[in-house]
Amino acid sequence: MFSTLAEMSVASRLAPFGSTVFTEITALARAHGAVDLGQGYPTWEGPDFVKEAAIEAIRHASNQYPPSMGIAELREAIARRWLTDTGMSVDPDTEITVTSGCTEALAATFLGLFEPGDEVILFEPVYDAYPVGCALSGAVPRYVTLHHPGFRLRADELEAAVTSRTRAVLVNTPHNPTGRVFDRAELAAVADLCRRHDLVAITDEVYERMVYDGEHLRLATFPGMWERTLTLSSIGKSFSLTGWKTGWAIGPEHLTAAVRAAHQFLTFTTPNPMQHGAAAALAAPEDYYVELVAGYRRRRDLLTAGLAELGFEVTVPEGAYYVLADHTRFGFADDVTFVHHLIEDVGVAAIPPSAFYPVSDEGRRLVRFAFCKDEATLGEALRRMQRLRS
Image (tube, rainbow, N blue to C red; front, side, top):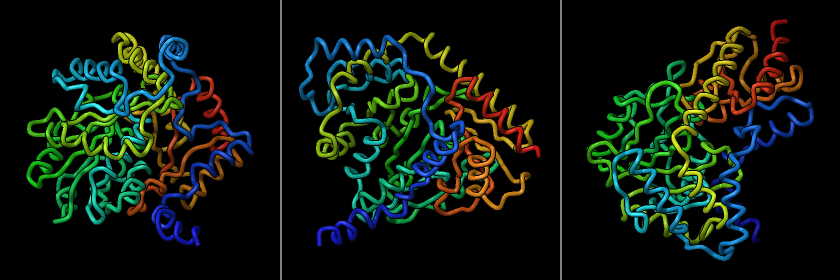
């Protein structure tokens, strides 16, 4: 009886997204000893000064429940960072909430803001947590496709997605999996749409520091957008600490209250030591980010040049740490077939992007590689992919 009820409620809504593509790819890669360019985690550890701050917190700070909204030290560090980046002051007590990663910030946002039947505009290819957030909250996703090869946002298609039930638009920049860094004109179109239709904007900016071409612009800083925008991020990507799951939501008090109402009953709070470490991370000098970007740009260029030489049609990413490449010339029917060939016969793991396309079939011709790997790993993957020539 209970299993039937569960299946009728949460499980049935999540069934389309509980596809085990990523789990299956990881297991298959391990079974075949494949070089893993699939999952988006670095092959190195985060900086010592951040880890040491967390270790010191375990030894000398409280290991009991911290405040639900996050320890004061971290919220104040986030506020200082925001002021440095934007010139805007935020109240760390009422406008910042620390969450267990950006993923939990997303879930709390969806659950806190939306009623069943509300519509949320998502851009495909779409990070899988977004449609899951819709399913959990009962919201309805409305998809706008970023078309290959340029993956630019088309203002007319964005406008066409709005209905009388539209409540919000979710923007991920730099974008996973395309690597687009949306420019001022694209974000101005989103801002204009939100103002005219009285929509909330949710921005996922976890790759904010990984910009190689263009400039990272925050939608919350556009005219009339602060009061209607929630900005979500974390330290996981910028500090190579994906397992820490320490993130945050920044926004006006009326939107923050909605996030906190859900956050309180999702994770209640985030582990104390990680918060102390995150506060130390956000105090890093600008030189840290300069070196971060230089290293990722070098890895990006190594991988994209190698893929192009092999015969892939490569879209060079402007940000984040993924590459989408067109595999058509190798003669495979779709992305899933091609990825299986890569893993089983070539020894390299990648992700089939059709998993990110709920509506369009544009992902069938593409494959996603992650370049958050050391150069030796990227070089070995390219060496193995020489087999594709034959």
